[in-house]
Image (cartoon, rainbow, N blue to C red; front, side, top):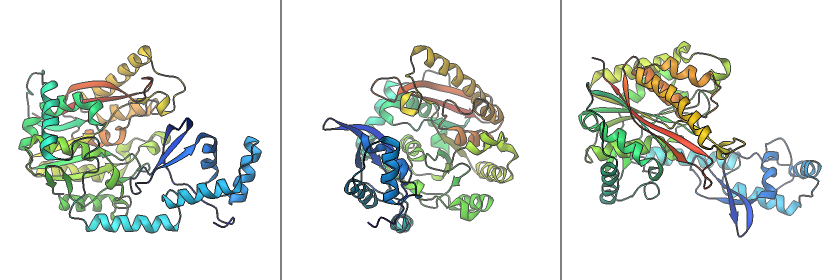
Length: 410
């Protein structure tokens, strides 16, 4: 590779890992487009920050020496950049061509294949049925039956082994609504979506039970409201994004494998609203989307689903210290304020409680649950479950998850 090139590393998923007593990091493509993983020794970790598209390889070596007082052999840097390129981890023409190929293949496919089958849940329908039925039996519904029909479900999107009790609590409680629905709108967190993005797909979603057809007429109406170019700009995120998938598996299970048309929507971060101290309700484009979703929900028996997690705290997410019992009690109080907004069907309270503390708890469902509350605004809800799930072996990092339902207006 010529020294004149200025390599730029794509955003990557970076996980601490020790290989053969060598501390370092595992690098992965967060979009799931490339299945390759790389191990990077810890002493080379700072090199990634220098590969930002502004420096030649010689400049990277010079900057590394100046900052850290250690030489970076040219053959080591060349090998690293070559490996990153081979794994499609560089933002360059080769990656862009690869991405276009992946998008074309995704759109040609009969359906979007379940990405986490065989990893987070069994890939075979019979084994999946056994597993989810066991979750439901081990976390039976203890709440009184709902007083009105259920219009919406707030479900986690954490992996099933950690979040199964909350999954089972909410989906078990919503069983009758799931079975009665003629359409399901799923608003999922887009973990890779830039602030202000809303991403659609016309592709059908599959689970081990079969295919759930996408309501393309609703998708087209949403695209018109949002802007067709923007609505499909990040469509590839649907390939690897797990939030919608993990909700649809539960939905399909409780329907006994019977299909229902779905509207899968990925919602990007709300950082821009928080930084600008801007109320999303003042955004005309977002308001158009809300109106389309409300009309779609009113047209036939519809269940609206928010596939979201709540807080992400502790060293695994950038906090300097582990979160112990006292910190987790504080977190529970903060989450309870958010759950009260869900209970009241109050999107403004949900937004400003998070924006008011600049999203210090890293609410993973911030944007998707706001949109859910806008669609079902004013309709009250019931919380079915809440837990803290460990996010590191030391149990100093935690993800809070909750399940809730929204009851239809009287």
